[in-house]
Structures are given as C-alpha cells and as structure tokens.
Length: 219
Ligand SMILES: C[S@@+](CC[C@H](N)C(=O)[O-])C[C@H]1O[C@@H](n2cnc3c(N)ncnc32)[C@H](O)[C@@H]1O
Image (cartoon, rainbow, N blue to C red; front, side):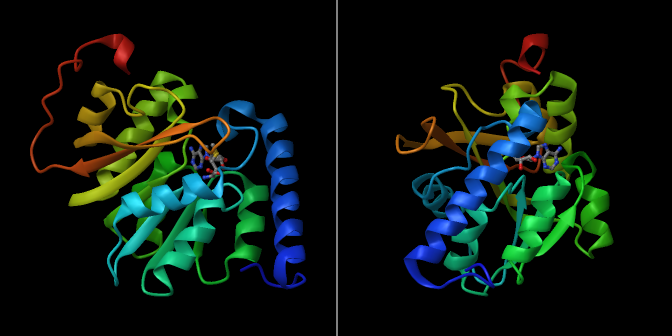
C-alpha cells in the first residue's frame, strides 16, 4: 500500500490515476524504453506473479517495474517472506517506487549492468526474475545485452517470467540461447491493454540448442 495518501477506495483511485499520468508522461519522453502507454492491468500483474511460483525466503528481482503495477501484487503476495529487489533505469520511476514501496530495495540503473548492480547490493544470483522490459520493441544489440545480463544473474534451475504483446516468444531463440534459458508460453491475459501472453523461462545448466540460433533476424 502507498504511504501518505487517503486510505480506502478513494486513495486507491488517486494512486491509480497518478500512476497512469506519470506513466503516459514518461512514455511521451522515451516511447521505446518505456514500451507501453499505460501500466499493466491488475489481471496481468496477478497472472505474472502466479507464474513466478515464489517460495518463502527467495529473492525476487523485478526488472523494469515502471510505476509498480507488478510490484504492488508481488509485495502483497509474498507478505514479507521474499526479498524484493527492483531495477529501473528511469529516474522519475525510481523516485516514485522508492516512495511507494518502502520495503523493496530499489536500484537505479540499466539492466544491461545487472551483474554489477546486484553485486553492489550483495547479490550474485537470484532464483526468480520478473521482467517488464519491452524486449521485442528494442533494437537487436540492446536485446542481446539484456538477455545475456538476465541469464548471468539467474540461478541454474531458476525461473524468469516475461510478458509480450506479440504471439511469438519475447526472447527469440538466439536470445534464449545467449541467456541459457528455455521457455514456454503459460498464459494469455485478454484483460490488459493490449492483451498479453505470459512466458516462463527456466535456466539450464548446459547450452541451449535452438533451431533459430544462427538466424540474424532472431536477435
Ligand atoms: C513496458 S514498461 C513496464 C512497466 C511495468 N512493469 C508494467 O507492466 O506496468 C517497461 C519498463 O522497463 C523500464 N526499462 C526499459 N529499459 C530498461 C533497462 N535497460 N533497464 C532497466 N529498466 C528498463 C522502463 O523504464 C519501464 O519502466
């Protein structure tokens, strides 16, 4: 729950309106990085958290939390039993998240540098990653760097959940191979603008054999 605002439904509506406005303003400033004009819906947020399959005592890294549409449900679902670490590159979102989620650790930085950012906070690998990154709308070299960084910090046997508005996988085969993860589509959420598919990726010990590995267009 956000601190310092009226309690109850009025407070919740004010929070939601403020988050929508902030999100739209940041999208206008940098549409490619923000990747959506409005925050994700609560229905998508709940489905993403369910797909994470969190266990008590785990650390969950959320990448690209924006205004905290997923974070709110993540914090609620784990009820203090999970260490919640957020990495966000937009300084305005970072300020908003720090104010809204006093019990989460908010790291300001670019997810391309995940290993270094986490190491500065005493973390080497995590068992769960919740990603809101708009991977499919990013240029191929950037996606590749992000995929490698996510793979580097995910434990073997760990799980990463990512959504996409497109029918194909959010991590195309070459990216999944670079991250050493294998994925499957687990859900479709119509009640989101736009509707979204949810993918779960698991980190494997050996190399990922992918049919599209050598295709340049897959990056
Ligand atoms: C599509 S929004 C998702 C926000 C939120 N998870 C939601 O679903 O409403 C993408 C978010 O990723 C952040 N982002 C984009 N590139 C990033 C990067 N390289 N490192 C960290 N955050 C990034 C954006 O600033 C934005 O907050």
